[in-house]
Image (cartoon, rainbow, N blue to C red; front, side, top):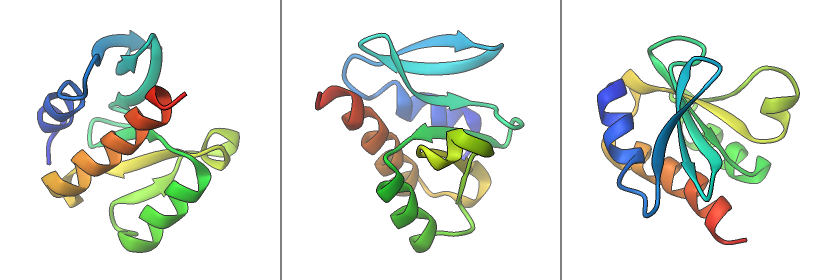
Length: 104
């Protein structure tokens, strides 16, 4: 997958809009970020998951998913190596992150 694929799939989530945070594109629903693009570099995306979701995805696809550094990663912020992901995996991870904010 590419950054363009990440953007395209993130924006398919109902109500998703693109914005920016700390100079990086982010994707929001109800004004809350569920994903960002380009951190730590252009080959990555980040999805905000629950810690148990993060653990599940990292166990299933360790070449794709890893925790973000520090407390963010401990809270579920999960990096995705885009070139290692396929469309179904990317769409699923984005959907989980989106659902975490819309199921409130």
